[in-house]
Length: 214
Image (cartoon, rainbow, N blue to C red; front, side):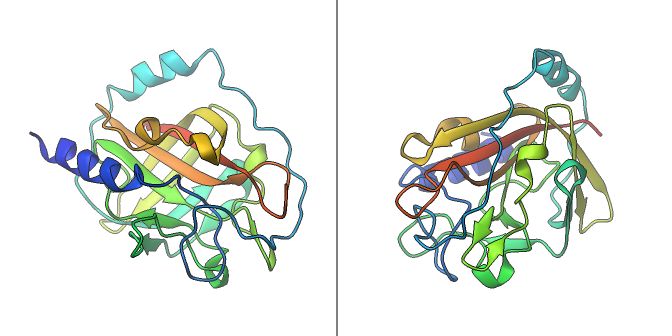
């Protein structure tokens, strides 16, 4: 079994226990967003374009990078340029950690998976909003397929990803295998919360799927 396969297997196992959320209350991980988030308007996430297949084919020809932790994340179309990148692991109940409310302006990297640029699905997590107001991914609805996400790494290299697909799903039906399952080339997932506030929380996850292009 390859190193990438082992990492992907480790990544997939714990999160099968609970759907991931990109929004949490305080410093504790949560399976659902907080009940006191500040209402903000969010446009529907656009559907994936017909160019996704050709984009994936181009991405498959890109040489994977060695392991190196992310230090800065830029999503120009969403107005995101944030550093440093937080390190996120698993909480005691085996749910995925999320950034604290105090770090709502930052994005976190799930350390149980690969680093951005390695073969496999690297996972980044950020808040859409918190009790304090809009957060780092507040403008995620502006992202379109074909947009670039740039991740600067500790080794001085930069991994550039192109968004292939955008998905908005009910947290009760979180696509665990699709998000965390093994891939044959370097990919990126960016996850946050979404949906209109219902009973005090956002019921959905918004997931960006992107391929390494250079």
